[in-house]
Image (cartoon, rainbow, N blue to C red; front, top):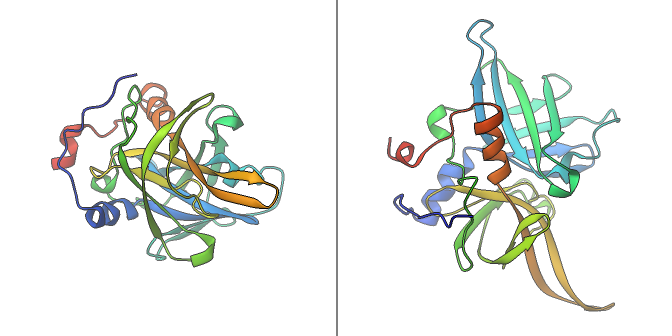
Length: 236
C-alpha cells in the first residue's frame, strides 16, 4: 500500500476536534452504546427524501438484529435525535463480522449536516506509517454524555484482519469513534483495547486497535459511485 503524502494544512488539535465533532454521533443500541461518524449524505430530488450514512464498529450494533431493541442516534451537541422506533434506519456489517465495521443508513426529512461539514476519508490504497500522530473522539461511558478527545500514535499493524495498533486507550462507549489526523482525514474506527495481561491478577497498559477506513472509502467510491472528498476540497 502507498504511504500517503500529507499535503493539507495542519490544524491545531482543538480546531480539528471542532470540525470532526460536527460529524460524530452517540449510538444507543439496546443495552450497548458506542460512537458513530457521518461518512455520506444523499438526496432524492424526486421525493425530497434525504439520506445519511454513518460508520461505526459492528460490535456496537451486532446484538440488535432479531430483537425489539431500538437504535437511537444523538448528535454531539444533543440537539438532533433519531430513533429506529420513529425513523427509517437500516444497519448492516461491511464485510465479515471479524472486520468490525458497520454502516447505518438513516432516512431523514432534512439533511443531517451540510455537505461542507463532511470529512475527507483516508485513501483506500494508503496506510499511515508508524509514529504517525492521530486523535480520536468518542463518548466514554464513564463520562456520559460528554464527547471526549484522545491522542496517540500509530504503533504497528495487524494483518489479519488489517488493523492499526495505537498507543492509546479505547474506553467503553468510544467504540466506533473516528480516528483522524490533524488535517481531519478520517483514518479509521476505534475497535477494541487489548490489555497487557501479565498474569491473572496483573494487567498493564496495552494497545488500542483501529479498523482502517479504507474499506468504507472503497465501498463508497467503487460500489456506490459516491463523490468522496479530495485534497482540494478541504480548502473550499
